[in-house]
Image (cartoon, rainbow, N blue to C red; front, side):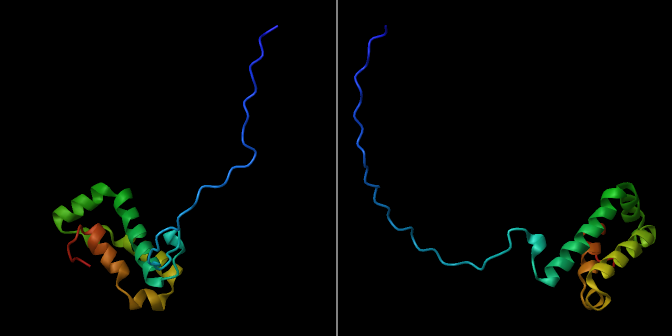
Length: 118
């Protein structure tokens, strides 16, 4: 038989440690956890335009490089731009899409690499 060890007495109640109040922080405006759930239509439109134009660049990198080099970017991407703009209008509505420059801004910034071509 193994020798027995003496039992250790433990206190039955322990007072909780005092908690100091957290320092007051200024309340910042709450933003949605997921930015795609934002209710700001301009933010949604900018994001959608950037996604659509980024897809063009992703799927046609050589075509973009050639268009930038030869100065024919508008002509080379005419069909892709038309299809993407149709999707943009479908999701946002024609009136809103035509009243803003978000799609054009995305074309210039992303497809044209910062040049004002559109």
